[in-house]
Amino acid sequence: MSYSKRVSLLMGMDSFIVLFSIFIGYYILNPYFNIYTLQMLIISSLTLLVSHHVFAFIYHLYHKAWEYASVGELVAIVKAVTFSVGTAAIVQLLVNGDIYIRVLFITWLLHMCLIGGTRFSWRMVRGRFIKPGIEKEGALIVGAGSAGTMLVRQLLRNNESELKPIAFVDDDIAKQKLQIYGVTVLGKTENISEIVDKNRIDHIIIAIPSLNKLEIQKIYQECSKTKAQVKIMPMIEDIITGKVSVNQFRDVQVEDLLGRDPVELDVQGISKKLTGKTILVTGAGGSIGSEICRQVSKFKPQKILLLGHGENSIYSIDIELRNRYRDEFEIIPIIADIQDRQRIFDLMDKYRPDVVYHAAAHKHVPLMEYNPKEAVKNNVIGTKNVAEAADTFSVSNFVLISSDKAVNPTNVMGSTKRIAEMVIQELDKHSQTKFVAVRFGNVLGSRGSVIPLFKKQIQSGGPVTVTHPEMTRYFMTIPEASRLVMQAGTLARGGEIFVLDMGEPVKIVDLAKNLIQLSGYTEEEIGIRFSGIRPGEKMFEELLGENEVHNEAIFPKIFIGKSVAVDYSSVQTLIENHTSYDTEYIKNYVIGLANKNEELLVKSAN
Image (tube, rainbow, N blue to C red; front, side, top):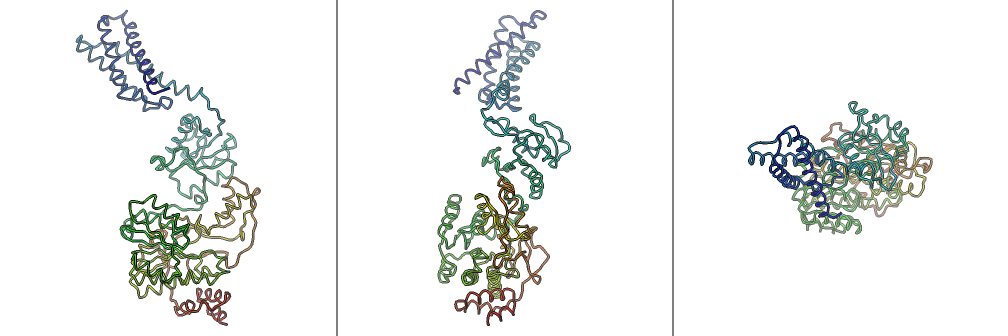
């Protein structure tokens, strides 16, 4: 129905109701009281008719979608009817010197019942008798708070939704057995499995946006006892700002189960370092580098330099940032190899960055075991090039992205990252630039993470390959790691090795099991195969060596390791002679050097 026809229909219906109400009021009372003269009846009727339409337009009674009517629409009806009857009363007083209170009260009462009844009847008819053409699946809503009730209301209104809310669960004792929009709170989160089995529920929707990570883990453990699909409702802020709708759920992700609650950053401190400054990010196309670029961009630098060796990855982050921040600051994509010393010095001289985040590195452990010379060239010599250029051109802060594999390393990758730490610690001794390193463990979703590999294996039907049933690792989300890297950079006094609190270590096999379940499969369907520890891998990772441990947190989730004396002459020997060493020699040398293991150094020399 067109808008004009809809308004005409509603106005005609209301006109009939207004006249019907006042005449009925007149005929009910007239036998017992001397009410209106015919002239006063006509004047009152016309006044009521005109005033009703005026107030109906003021309160938008002809513009509302009555199939979604609620308390707000009822309030609008009360106001329109009350003011129109009040106007009729004023006219009666002016014309006749008296107000016919009894007849106007009956008129108001009939007016309210009929106007409200006709409007709300459409919602009832639509909700109860106009059935959708799709068969709906039952949904259990976890959380009977504002978000959960908003969700249920939306699902009940939307006939095109494939979900029908069956029940709530909520740990609030006061809400037990209560009904919200006709949906009952049947129990607590500990009763999820029982409620799902009894009520033929196919979907569980977690509708508590304020949940912390530990609480999500606890709820998911209960949900995992069922065969129902588990979803999470979007954040209330995203709904309010229009980014997503209430019923746009997302799957529970591994990050939800392994991540931690975000730490509050020192925004003012970070702003002083970044706002209005020139920031260089090496490895800007990588998982960590690109996320650092995104986080830095929020602080409105003057320029951000995106330096990387791979043109496709630099192109992607360049386009992403330009689409979002095109008119706010200058974005400069740079294709360069950190091993090209002259190129790095030329760039540093040209742009004179204030802060450098050095994320460029070879990070794949088994690959670097086969290519130790490349690991040395990129992770050690490349870092030395960028760091010395930063020193030469007076960069304020230099932040090296390091790894937990740099602690007591048993592999080439970890050893070269530890040696890179040695390089910047040595430079810091005689430089005005504040050189620091930030260590953290595996990053969920990064290119080198097991998550993408596991997902591909699950998509292809399995099995998921895990090296060893006892293999454990620390995990952190990419945004959390990047934010803490920026925070650590503001805390730098020079020479520190900052260590991010990675929480509790996680068994890789448990991670695989969670991912299989989140993908909608059982362990029996996909399977897990143990492939054995690969070259250079450790069973457990550490974040600090015994002689580096410092128990005091300098900032929430950021610890500072004690500086360790370094024999830099051995590092210089490696840098100067690495091209003449064979693969096995370099492998023993870098591991021995990183661990200060004289036996390995002697063995490599022989």
